[in-house]
Image (cartoon, rainbow, N blue to C red; front, side, top):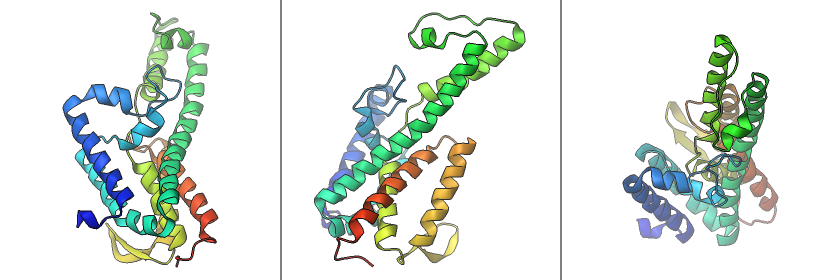
Length: 242
């Protein structure tokens, strides 16, 4: 059955699985090198904007992503053709990285300003210099709290193909809006044109509210937005769509 999957979708799945296995054995070395860090973080490297799409944090993470790609990817690969499908996949992944880190930038600027106002030298800290907390006990406690949030953004990488795959799902919903799919917790199949907006709205809320549970929800939104825009621009030129 695996050989019947169109080549690009099949190869993306294979690469993801190989990278996951290698990362499992090499651990933090691979994560620090290939995961997607905040662009102004000292841990960031330019290639991470691509390589983070092939990193996953757990078996369930990669299983869910690859099963979703297996469900929607082959149809789009056949509909769009190799070139457009590749553009869709990687452009969606880049869109996910951009939107997620745009919000990170907003949060980092806010945290930096608060820390600087309390006397903490953020630039010196990022350069690796030894920085001491200043002020009274309440000020130091606040600085430590803000710094933990700051480090949570700067030192925590983004991993996973979810942004790219959300772009694939959004493109599918744009080209085949009346297709029905089954999903957990919903007892009847639902049309994708209704399901996708619900998922996007929930993702926006979770991403902006900080209740995301360690999941990069805004990355999903970025990927879906790019996938929707690309499919919308291509739709009028396609002969196969519902």
